[in-house]
Image 1 (cartoon, rainbow, N blue to C red):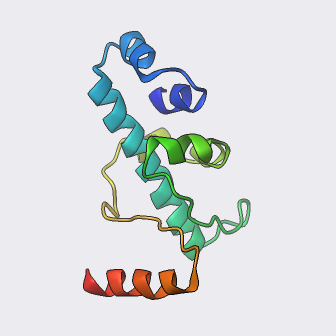
Image 2 (cartoon, one colour):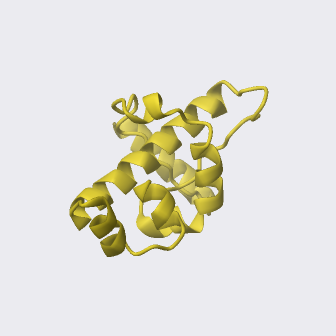
Length: 115
């Protein structure tokens, strides 16, 4: 609920007041749901669903990226069950990185290898 409201440009303070949560709890909930969506899209990129096709990863690590990609995130959220949202992350260290230049590919490969 907090994620949906945030994507519809409701201020975090108003969401916190309506849900009787602190702003920090709302921020943690936003990040958790964004990471769940990212995890789901990652799994669908590896093993596409016939109904959805391949879902490429999209960046959603910051609030600005969440708002920028809100349509794709909300579309994906419709496919994630409440049971799946209530479980822990399967891939807690999953991150998306935009590679905008050829040297970026090499840097990303080195970063992955260093993990």
